[in-house]
Image (cartoon, rainbow, N blue to C red):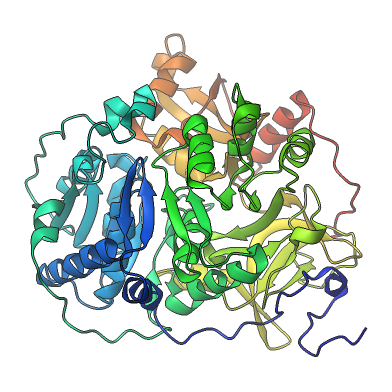
Length: 585
């Protein structure tokens, strides 16, 4: 067989997906262009289904144009940052594209975050304008009012769920009871001393056209935040071009074609839901089916009734879906692709998926900094508990974390990646950006902070993390951030956060706490967990708390979190993994 000149270099070339190019020729246009193209070429086609209500491309596009004009009238200029603080919804699709049309930058914010966590999300990007659904808007306003001495947020566009839902009798009877109380609840009264409030409904009712702006592929489009060992969240600077690469690559790699139907239940504030869900579907001519939150019965019904073909997710969703009573009576045969990352897929569940639907769960690997995948398993040759092979246009290697020397096959080291989807750096964090990249033989590589190995066939496997990070059902929890919140508890003297193995979530959060002397006989673990639920996003809240008299320390006084983690690991029995060697020091 004659190997094409563009064939990827390395042993994984032998496992490259048939018909998938090794490099892409990207359209030199902003992300808005594909959205506008859909509205121009098929304006009345169904674009999106949401809980029984459908939206055409014309409807979404018109809403985005009017909202973009409104944002400009509120003072949004090209390059300004605008917060999106909401669950998956048609408003997210409209709002995201409106910000792009105004030439501004989307700052996606986790809708589970509390006021204590939102101050940094406002101040660090300098966002004067935000959009939020009414049910969670009070948290954002509380954070903004705390900054009244030096106000940053000036305008909030408030979305009422009633503006997005179908009329009574149009599918509402299928909603979970918990959703009915949430989605149909009257919006709360919003009180603020610093922020001007604007009703979404009123802004979209105005027949206004946005002013023209010039947007280049190299311009900033997205500023998602990720934390780290210091606990201070950092904005990842993604341009239209860095996002565009993985958007376009999803087509050939996932066999995504015009007319396909994409289920988006992974949150769109998360890079995977945004890039591999929303943006890929728009670019490749697919129809969107949105769910605001995970519910296995709703997901099963959506796949069956909407004939979903593609579903990117996290393994816990698949585990939950296949455990649904009566799942064998639900028609899931329309699915052609199912896959994701964030945690390993249990072998028993992968086998059930193969036997039930004839589908292989396609695992992949990526980070916020890389616009989702840098690695993915080929659909025709996928391996379990495996990150896959380097993605289209991407190079990867395993190096010694200190010497940066490339390691032999099978040895564990830090995974480095280089490719067009890698971000430009951290927002206003030059030192952190410099630490995140390394130049080897004239080529710039991103240091993922993950430890892995590569086998003789060029498949990559995760081994461990250099960074302190807990992966709870695909959500990244940074221990330093949780510790910073816990130290605000009046009864907590010290806190160290570690991971606990969880058969469903993969990992859960555990806090090892030294109470203050006056609270040592009164503080209970339940008190700490209840306090945490009021002050931080639910996925960060410790699922278990251990009260101790002291924490282990080094000679210099640093808390030895690795000692606590090792003790916790010894208490549990990890799944046996493939043998691997560790780098010598």
